[in-house]
Image 1: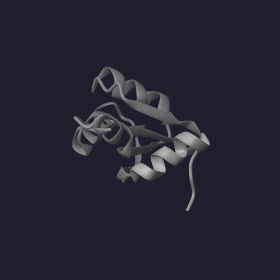
Image 2: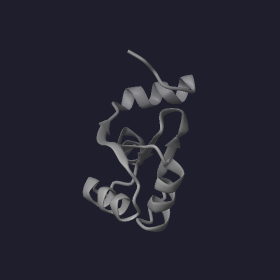
Image 3: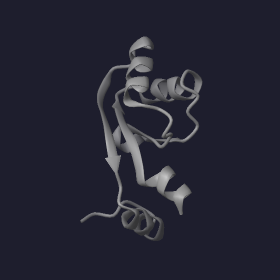
Length: 92
């Protein structure tokens, strides 16, 4: 249960125009392995709890990736399970 809570309930959402380059920076410079590109939203969800917003911002600036937004997202565990069952995003 703790693994699910730490990997899916809370994450950072990075909004960028150049998500392939941002994903490259996350994987190669920050060594992040637990992230998901949401192409339809132009966002990347970062589930790596070892990274801080500051780490992400500094790496993106060094690599000249323009950041639209970077937010901490808290997903209630119940919503995560509904998303698993329904196979998509749940809406209130």
